[in-house]
Length: 358
Image (cartoon, rainbow, N blue to C red; front, side, top):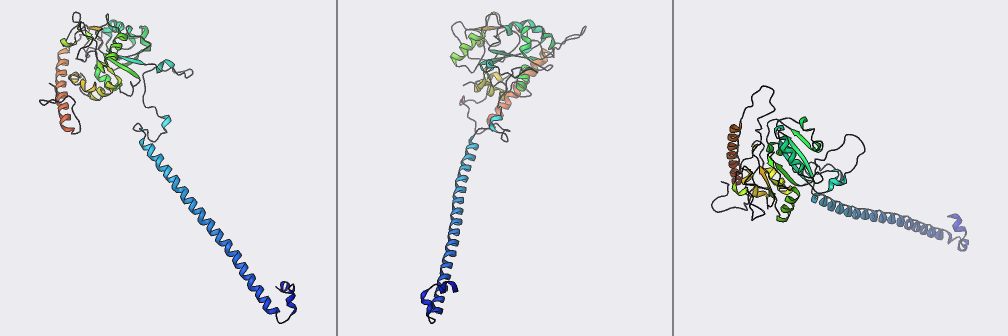
């Protein structure tokens, strides 16, 4: 400060020198306080502004995250796939055979509309089954055989057999197999599922023409009409009528399901009621004929496995029929109980008299 004081002319007066120096010192202190104070205030203002900006940014991000979470919750995800990214999840499958080696090629034809022919077969009906399968073009039908007698290798000499899917379990019925191996997610890619017995004569049957009628009529569940002359007809209503394209009854011999109807029907098939008697009376709940087949009545008993030489084949058809009848009574009771217990279910066919089948 002595240097500053010496530069002022007025300091030549000894009387004024102390006062002026004091004034300069006070001014310097005020200026210093103002400088450092403004710097501090600016820093505080900057910090407050940054904090406010960060808070606003956090609020925006939080809102965006909430919207993303809400959108994710709205996405329909298959049960069990929640821990996985959506793109890796494969919701359904098919019965397309894949090679064990070689390059992985995507079959362009696999995306074409195909249907599935499923037959419960025994080796005794090999000739009839061969005729049935040959009626269905391989380009639009996949074949699946349920071997209830356990015999698979004896089918290998048929040209189409190597392209078919074979499932074997001894002494089981078509519906036992269907419940376990035709889950709706497995057969989702197939437009229609033909779930047939093995004893059907198909001389006058055209699968492509039949599906054309099914689509034209909008039939979710159907069966080809039976030839009344050549067939073992259980219900007269299933006989082919010369004046009509369709009839109003489907039994369990040769049903054809759309994939939507099969998803419903599959849930109605009971695990332990393997003959499915009574199911045909309720198929209408799952369904919102110019060609015909003949039932030859030659279905082998599922208890007739391949007999060894010299053994006697036991005919258990009466026992099978008795078991089937008991199953039908059980099924009816289960339906009745289910209707009474489910307060949310509305019967679209309800009448004032009755809600249960007869």
